[in-house]
Amino acid sequence: MKLHSPEFAADPHRAYEDLRRRYGPVAPIELAAGIPAVLVLGYREALRILGDPERFPADSRAWESTIPESCPVMPIMEWGPVESADRGRSTHRSAYLAAMADIDQYRLLGTVESAAVPLINSFCGTGQADLLADYARPLTLRVLNELMGLPPVLGAEAGAALMDLIEATDTSAADLAERRFRAVLAESVATKRRSPDRDVTSTLIGHAAGFTDAEIVEQLAELYAMGAEPTWNLVVSALVLMADDTSFHDDLLAGSLQLRDAIDKVLFTDPPLANACPRYPQQPQLVGNSWLPANQPVLISITACNNDPAVSGDHTGNRSHLAWGSGAHTCPAQPIASIIAREALDQLLDALPDIKLAVPLSELPWRTSTFHRAPVTVPVTFPPSLPLVP
Image (cartoon, rainbow, N blue to C red; front, side):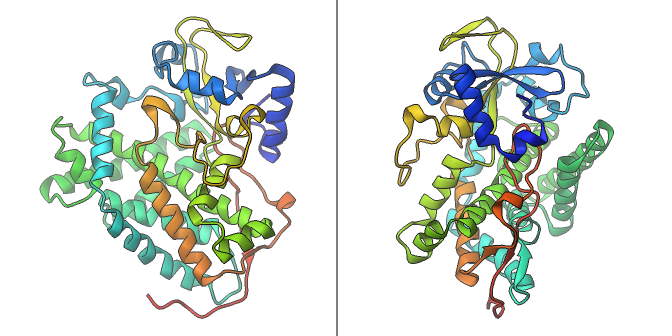
């Protein structure tokens, strides 16, 4: 199974079912052309792997030495400067946790609303919009820029560079976009050194570990990239489900289904990071009835594991999904991303409750990606409405 193929992107759920039927809880796949890996489809097997960092470490360096630098999955899977620093991952994770804990969640609600209202007002009178390009993506970037402490000009440059990096079709374009992205973050770090504030950048600068500017740039780049695309894809995936599923839509608007439960339903059925959490066993490991090769990526299919028939059941009020990871590497930004997604949906549905997809769900284009489950565009229609009062 080639996870980087358009056929996989068009119907991944069927692909997971085919793999499970043929191989069981773990299956051979191809990450990119000529790059083999193992995909974990079983929920219990995933928990075992994610909970055993000694046998299944996240260190990819031995594998990287066998892979060409031009491999398209390297930007996501490479063992970067943050991980290779002498102070170790635990120090950087403690800094991430401190930065997330320092975010005022009540103030965050206001930040999301301040970003949402002008975006909604820009299209609410037209009766149509692309909820990815016109709403979820710019809202997420504006909120992240505020949390990171990026001023408007630098925030716009960072968002543009990130989009160029995501959409790059060759290595040289990706390298150029990545350099621009880091240069913007470096400029922001230098500014915050002179004038700290209450934001993520300033928290990292003031951390007891005494990080260098280069380390902080790497940390910010990881937080920004991992916080941006999955968050806006979570918002649009919830909107796609709502626009396509009448009962889901009606239950949500009637209040019998809470937004938090609606988001968790998406995180179960179609999480924005469909395949993630790569691990690299240093010795062959037996999982189920399969031997996993040493120093070959073991990728967790979060979507397949969440929908494993062996653990199926009612998902309402159930947060046992793996969308935030599990074990020592659970996403530190989980509460922040959840607030952004809930408030973004709340603002939009209050203003435009009768959103419908402008095309049949079967015709919605999906991005070809090994890791992400994301629509290319989300065209919708709705009865035109008056602008919101900020």
